[in-house]
Length: 349
Image (cartoon, rainbow, N blue to C red; front, side):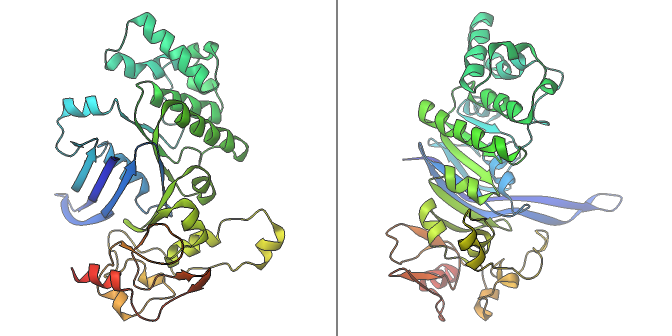
């Protein structure tokens, strides 16, 4: 059973100009994406900066209001929820923000930062909330003495642990991790990632991990969704996606991930995409990736291919939004000359 179901989610930011601030266009930050997150799994959402990953996470929580689409959390329609209903829902849906320096109030002590949500939701007495804060601090690898300190007295890794403790305070079912380690030193990243995995096992958590570091996503995710210019272009099991990427954009992303083997690193093919990422205020017609795609043909300029299940010998469900996805048969990679039937049928419908 899916814990979270997102269908045709859109978030368009208006562009206003002139003295009267009239709307002259829109930034299509998220433009019709669909995915599910199963209970207990970790779904990684990856892509270049500006592709709409963080906007997706905040829209799911309704921290920003989605333009259109459907968001269902445990059979509850999040889009139709009232303000009071959303407050109840947010006990089960929490977020870890990207910047540990900006996400903590510098004027609040750590005990108040972590215990604030408990107070808002009227959970326990003052003594019980204090005890809960102490337990959370120890859970994330900090000590009770840290409760009386201010955020500026901590390192970046310690601040992110405080942010994780705050997200755990209400015993949520789903945590959206918005690039939780991108602002941390490399030496600290592994500690935080391992902490998140340990907490998932201990508290039966479900994660939506947003990141641009594909090596981090590979380590922590069960499935991975790849975004480009507000669209999801590929979704698959993590191991399958990394070994058998079918979309040309995914192939380019993976070719940029360093491999800790000098011999392999020297001999592998690096894919350099030509051109710049188009503006989300004026996305290209047809497939959004076709201006930079080495496989693009005339059909790619007609309509955006929908996510379609492809075949191959991986034995796993693999969805790709591409007219010419790479195919793997017997471990041999080929690129077809004719458009994929599934993408054609989806585009025609």
